[in-house]
Length: 308
Image (cartoon, rainbow, N blue to C red; front, side, top):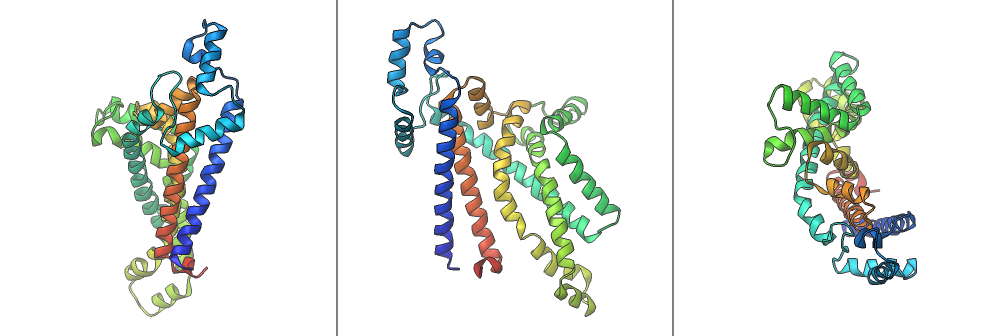
């Protein structure tokens, strides 16, 4: 398949996904019981004031017209204004993006480092104690809620040992615990996938033939088994962005991290529709772009995709 055709197809699919997300989110948010005018003017405002605010916000228009107006503003970079904070959603959102990117990047580092390492160890020593330890780690981290893991880390490494700060935002020391907590869940999935791929690659005829010819096992592992076993990792990382963005809501609250997850939680608590809509669309765009990048990387490193 030609690379340009492949890229255009992925971009087209991404645009369709974003439009679908915007429609569904818009409909869900505007059918829930909420009163934006009262959030702005206060519960004691008179009906005339509420009606004037609804007219200013365009809430007196039909739903389909409100959606078109919102999307038109969105094309100009306008995500609306928060009903509660009375500030630009775009400004508040993008001021928090660097912190979220730090958190997500750190989580990806941990999930790839831990997941790939344990997956390779488990696959190479299948059925033995290293494999059992790796699989035990995967089962425990998948089952443990992230907020419980985060609180345990804070208690152990922050309170008891005093090695790391008890939340907040700053340098590398502040990033370690929240990013590790966020990345552990996906590290478990990476462990299981990479282990399965290592086992599968180990059974391939060319690997068996290389071992039969007397090629050292280390050489076979490095040149034949590992390159094939890690092929799913870029795609998994692209898919992980969605989980990481969702998990960031919890992590931001546990560790006091000033990311978009914290902003989203504030919007949910106040039923602040522009905030929820803005964060949702940003997260969806983030996930779509990450998946396109992952698909492109997989296309470049896996010849099987180019001929499919």
